[in-house]
Image (cartoon, rainbow, N blue to C red; front, side):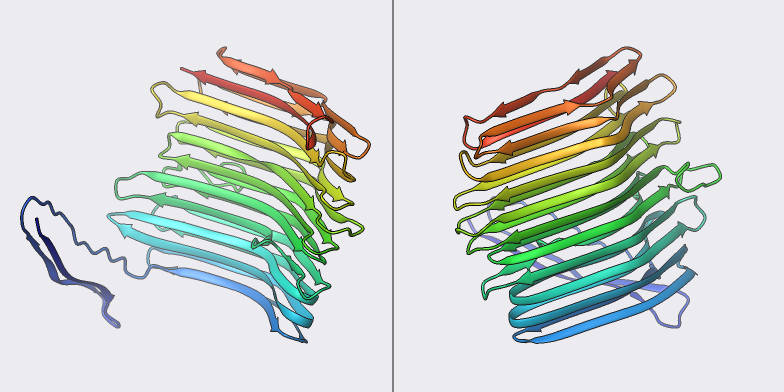
Length: 499
């Protein structure tokens, strides 16, 4: 059997300069030939949205080097822009100072810092649209070889976007600082932000499809990452406030930021991490994150989730003095909320004085890992066979270290804090919460050996109305016999109800 399939198509979408109309043309088309038992199908289409507007404003400092030398750069500035065109009203702006520098004896490196905001409105046919924006204060970089790299970003960025003739609107802002310092001490040293960006991020989006389906999303994040291999160090920090929100085309009241959006998210906190490796093939990594997300799909599925997390890991092959990783989230506050036009809502909110993880090793063949997190997630689903709500609130600590090795690992979560998750409408009120004082702590001293874990808190509670599935659990496990030694503990509250 032979099958021959020939296609010739030219699709163009153009806006004639200086004219008051758009010209859309298609030339060529489909040319299909088939022989024997065969099947063929296809479609050509052109969608042209005249004048989709977009604004991006920011300030960036970037430094890169290959080989011996030095470079540094610092910039300070501010800019704001507002446009009303193409069926959208858009505004974006920034005010900040950014710097980057490198000093190399040998090797290569790159450091950068950015304070930036962007907002875009896109018309996608038959009254549909996509409206989205972001605001960031960021640093990133790497260094391979012998030298020192630094970057910092400080300031604020914000955006606002509206779809004319509708209530659809997005907004967001990030304000604070981000910094990194990376060092290498031998020709094969590697220090970096692990391919990630440190700093503050806020974004939101409202989308309406041709079929009339609306999706709203709001994100607020703060993060710090550090990674080293072979004789190297990295120090990363991020601190400030990131928040965003969105109203969709079905919203019918006066707008008030962080009070009545269809979706909104906010994070506040200070995150830092430090890693060092002092021998060949020694490595250490840290990450700290504070996230909050809100999503509304088709006015029917409401989801909110968020919380802080820390991770630290060290592994040692050499006989160096130590390989070290430690990271912290301090004074964290986070939350997200989703509301639909039917007066149903979900919310997650939390606060915490401190969450820290550390992993220290002191001899060849030793490994250590620790992590801790608070994770809150809640959802309300009208599209299921019956209306359904579900939620899970979890406080976790974990530590492990190589058996009988000089290795330490630990995570501490506490001591002040509170949090709650909830889902409600006219018939359902489900919620779960925790209260301080918190003493969630897992620790390993593998050489002793010694292991301990604690999951103490002021109160953990859950309630459903009408009565549905609900529960509290506090599992734990400790071992100094297994390899690796480990200790972990968790406090959970969960609910699930259907009508």
